[in-house]
Each structure stands twice: as structure tokens, then as C-alpha cells.
Length: 78
Image 1 (tube, helix red, strand yellow):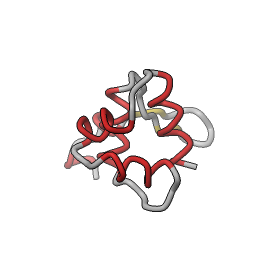
Image 2 (cartoon, rainbow, N blue to C red):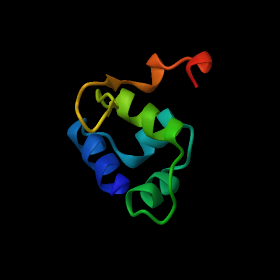
Image 3 (cartoon, rainbow, N blue to C red):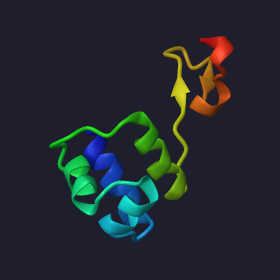
């Protein structure tokens, strides 16, 4: 599933895999492998790609009462 999400975000911004690779600090073929789900990216890579493509990653509780981004959590909260 994450491969489809990464491909969607990249295509919305009309980026090539090589461009995303440079942003994320990985090779173009690594981006291809993320998108085909041959390998799994780290959360940090997913976040870099999302941010560059203009998307934010939110976590929401099942009841919808709590919502946050990873940047909102500090080490002391864990």
C-alpha cells in the first residue's frame, strides 16, 4: 500500500523517480523498489517524500479525538 501512496504523491507533483531519489538521499532504482513494494522505506524517507510533495502525515485516534504529526512528539513524550 505505501508504494501506491508514494507513487501518487510523486506523480501529483510531476516528479521523476530520480528527483525524489535525490530529495530522499537514495538512488532512483530504490524509489522504484519502494513504489513496487520490493523493499520498504523507513518512516523518515516516507516523511521526506511527503513533505517535498506537499503532503503531511497525520496520526488519528480511532475515536477522532486526538490527531498529531510526528514532529509534534518530543522525545520526552515517548
